[in-house]
Length: 361
Length: 219
Image (tube, rainbow over all chains, first blue to last red; front, top):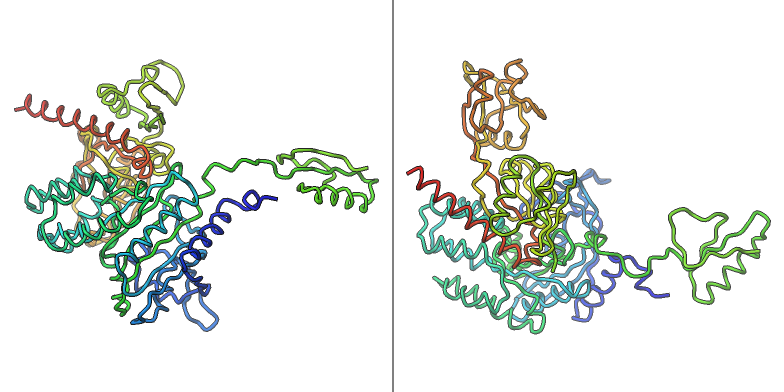
């Protein structure tokens, strides 16, 4: 029997993703089921949610069902090791669904690369993000952004910290009319306001986008960000055609500081992969290394069109009150040995589909 | 070619919106026929329209059943859907206001009772003022609430202020200006990028020209 047909889409995706990460030498990281609530409360903004499922542990401590995996991994990272730590995980996380706003159990598979990161380490993670999407659908898109580039422009325009949050939210919504108004209100110079609006609307493959970005560079931060982006886009090689530069991919700058990315598949209403480089989170947790990683959220995969074989079993064996159990077992066994899936019943079960229906006895 | 699915808000606003889409080259004549159909296609131009309840437009768009849609800013502020807000159509203009009886004055001494269809907008507004309030969520005829003493004030949409006036109420504060917005599903924006940016560009240009014209005639 074909394992691909036996496993559900998300289960099959997990198998293939884990195989992929092992192929790149990542090691499996198994986490404890629960974490102390304290860990999440200190980093609420990293999680983008205030809602965490909590309960009281046996020793009276307030515990939480993991809303996130990254924080647990970072917590257990030893600082200052020479080699990179490359780990992958597949875990259930519990967080409110963005659409129904109620808690959901979400299967998350992902990886983290922690240590003294160089360009290749970053590019490899982006490459693995692209390959992860590729294992699920050939038509994926991976959006890249660089927070350093946007931050560099805002530095140049001397935008204050409290005003940045508002501007970043508008960029995230690609809301150019409101962004224009906000820039005017803040008295931003016209050419910088124009560039900020261009960043918000930009959606293009690297080959088209890099040139206009070069024209926007105004300081060292922007130049550094652009050169990182350019190098990563070149280093990922053949998956480059699936990359798009989109600066509306935003994330809290208190945690993320450079490259961030989101992955999308056609037919799904929202992104399925999210990741980025989050050195600032490590700094907050008192560590000096860099870190980049991503997670793939597999709960959305049920929405993808089901695969070819739509039969619930090949053969339905019907038996009557007078048929002996031994006869049923023998008939079913024969069919299974011939390679078919068999369901035995006294009546045809409603709603299920079978290739053949046979009677025993 | 994949069709662009467009969710239009049922009612007067939706008809004005369709007119804009028609003028910028996305006509769909079957929509003007008198019948009870809800979905209309023009495969030649690659568009499919459907009518939904105005407050449901962001839901259709957020969940990807519609690629783009038109919704009032009031609904976007109330439900905070995860979508792109691409363009301000400059129609359906009104204000989100605090209104109350003409003789009402908030002395700040008591918890303020606020009746509204928009609890999130009301809560956020009063939270920004650090004012303690009691929210009363209603689904219609909000204006009656202060008259019958159910609430001290209401938070509601005011277009001309006529309904308020006729009920002896007046607007007290403006919370935010409202108008119709073109919104898009984030994933559709990526996979149907060219179609959606073309549509958005045309609509935007049309609205800008019309705004300039109306300024000129007014000037």
